[in-house]
Image (cartoon, rainbow, N blue to C red; front, side, top):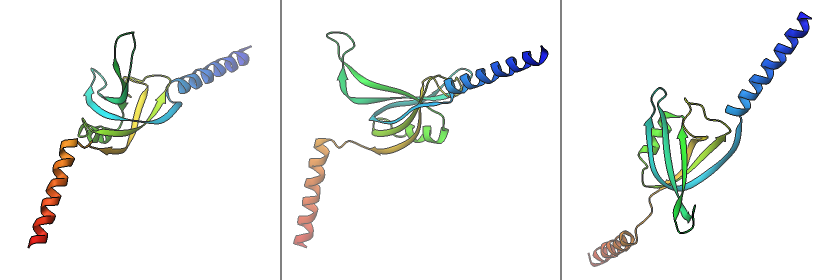
Length: 146
């Protein structure tokens, strides 16, 4: 009788550990999101975590007559990566992320955890590209006349 109770208890503990792992540590999905990095901040009361928001191109409507952009809210576990992202605010970036079923307070506020930056670049303004081209033309003309 006692041996049977120990087997049942061990089985229940194994199922509990497996369910906990599946809920909080099993990677449900992986992917890349691209857009303009809105912000990355460090916040929290007990666990200080890095949270960010990426504004993706395109628009959507939650209700008739309203317009809203696609927003991707994410967390960052790696402090060095979060510091790099903080310097990229307002720039277009591609972020690789992992999606989990559950949220752990020391990992962040979201189910999406960014683990790397794939690319980052600054979108060129039309006025800046025109000025850059005209400046290079002027430099070439100066070199030709000398």
